[in-house]
Amino acid sequence: MRTQRQVIDYSLQRRAVLRDVRSGRVTALEVCDASPYLRNAATYHGEPTDERCPICRRDNLTLVHYVYGEELKQSAGQARKLAELPVLAMTLREFQVFVVEVCRSCAWNHLIERYVLGRDGLPELDEDAPRASQSGEGRR
Ligand SMILES: [Zn+2]
Image (tube, rainbow, N blue to C red; front, side):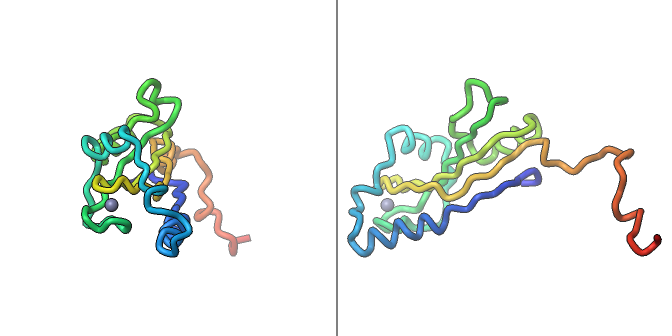
């Protein structure tokens, strides 16, 4: 998405959790704790993926996109379909997106990424702004 910025990737944390499950330090039961709300969000607003669940390997993972930000008012904290995000990004100045992967079979879930979207991320169109490229360094 064009206005995507401040991306934070959680794949290291995810890998650490999966390592703990495989080594037996953490039980699958402890990490497969998706709430009924999250499972519902996966069913109704989720984005299907081709990736198998790393815990049960029975089902493919579903991505749920949660949106946060003052401009969202009452809908802050709600799950949105991926297709709705570009529309929001053009309407609002700034909001946060949290991407959570969920397995609908075993309830494994983990935050995988968060980023900021919104019109504030578009390049400046201000013609009066000084441009570094025109005042070239070597011309002094
Ligand atoms: Zn699973």
